[in-house]
Image (cartoon, rainbow, N blue to C red; front, side, top):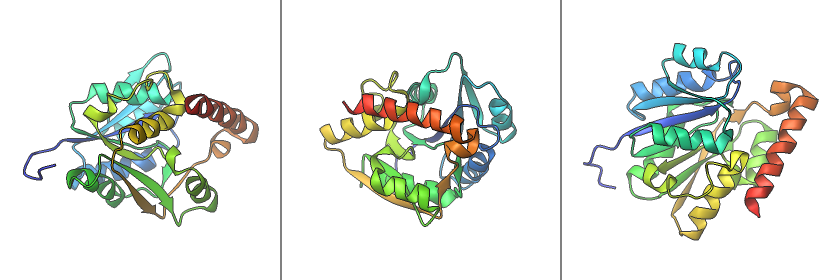
Length: 216
């Protein structure tokens, strides 16, 4: 892409009941906006039953509230259609250690023309989250992608937790140049930490099932 052309970037955070975690993501995204790495921060509150939307607004983010819940893929699609930006930066709502530099490093490959999509992969964070991304990097929820490309991907609306699989399948089929970016000192709040062991396990098993369905 020609650096002389003004490119608008929106960070989209799909969120479901993340009032206790989302500020740790939105504060650094706010700094990234101040530093010119993104132009807008958009939280898609996907059928939230807690104060996620209120916390997001207090952090200065634009908020799109969905009802009923559409799942992660549906929330990402709604966010993409809600903004007029050229580049979408998808960021999970439960990250730990996010910095503005992480966002810059994710967007730069698209601005420079090196890639059609970039993926943020955790490094030197917690063993559990680092190991998961080493085993299955294609499941990373941290991506920068051109809006026009994202909107061409089929089945996103109904993919729920399988959305990263749908994106990966489409990018491989169309032979996109994809840049893997190591996000140093990054981690994520695990579902079992948020919901307790059994509650987290239930959600994790549902997530794996939705990922499996998208993989078939």
